[in-house]
Amino acid sequence: MRTRTLAILVACGVVALAGGWYFGVATTPHEQVAVDAGKLMFPDLAPRLQHATKVEVEHQGKTMEIDKRPDGTWGLADRAGYRVQEPKLRGMLTALTELRLVEPRTSDPAQFPRLGVEDPASPTSNSNLLRVLDSAGKPLVAVIVGHRRVRTQGNVPDQVYVRRPDQDQTWLAEGSLQVDAEPTLWFDRDVMNIDHARIATVVAQHGADTIELARQGDKITVVKPADHGKLESYRVEDVSRALELLAFQDVQPDTAPVGPESGRAVFTTTDGLALTATVYQGDKDIWVRFAVAGDGAAKAEADRLRSRLAGWTFQFGSWKEKALVPRLADLEAKPEAAEAGGGKDAGAPSPPSSGQPRAATAPAAGSEATPAAPAKP
Image (cartoon, rainbow, N blue to C red; front, side, top):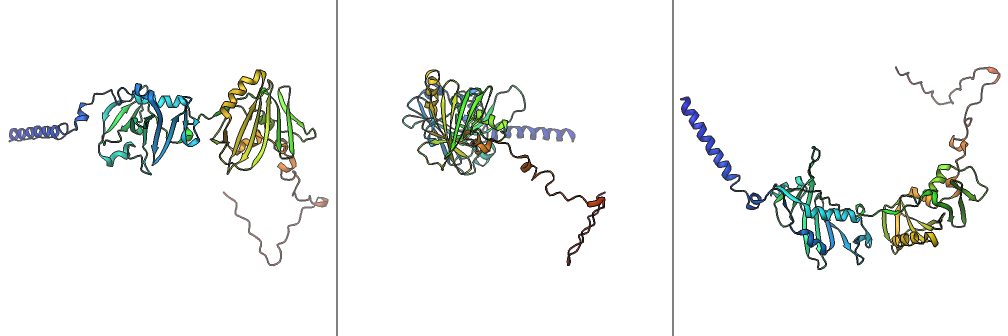
């Protein structure tokens, strides 16, 4: 009896294995079975990218566009062509040419959101559709890029989930492809870097009010008006460092509207470079336009900065205004009495006379005395 039962179980096992093979591998789409591990997703893409003139990234129905300009550089279309970080762009395009298929994943659209490869036009989508086009508007490559696969091991290749826009088959691919749809993540944010030790003078104007700072030894200080209060050294130093490692938040062409002018300042360096910063009020932050001049030793630097800054208005945090266009009140130390709330004796009760203890004050008529709160254990 036991031998017969064992034989039946073995037979059932063989049938189950055969059925699993038939309904599993035998019905797998041909493209899944035929893929070799490590195969390039886009063979021969590298030479074709030489004809690329536009890069588009669609996310949640909105498209960011990076165009190749006549001078060969690349710029953001919705920022009037302001330059992008070209090393970042080159890195993304190179990663496309090196993307290798590792293994097929789901082809069920209901499962796409789990991998982040759903329709990029959806307002809740997490995917990015990356397209590279030539001068005729013909796509050289298009791919939907999803979630990156989290790897806990060290020294292992990056992996990402991808899907071709016209196919339901998804893939796990090997490569360092990173796609950003937010324009501000593509900016080359550096404006200038003028070392604070080079600043010789700063002349700031707010309407009819003018202050002048000048270098004295290794620091700058306020020289006009000569009659001023005690200065906060760190605030004065902030002025000398206003153009040091300067990076913006956003940018727009000079033709775009800005708020009223807040003030302007001219920073002059020890070698003759002159930079004028004009500050305008924004909704929350400030907008700044720069003008550059310089001759002799400063001419080459002035020309380089002018080509970078001319025609643009840059957005900075509002906190930067006091360094770029300082007022005397911004630099002076606050009176100690004001900081202490009117002085250490302000509001203090008068001492009792004749050394007698102070009598308790009776509550006003018609009011009730508030009972003391019980002491905490």
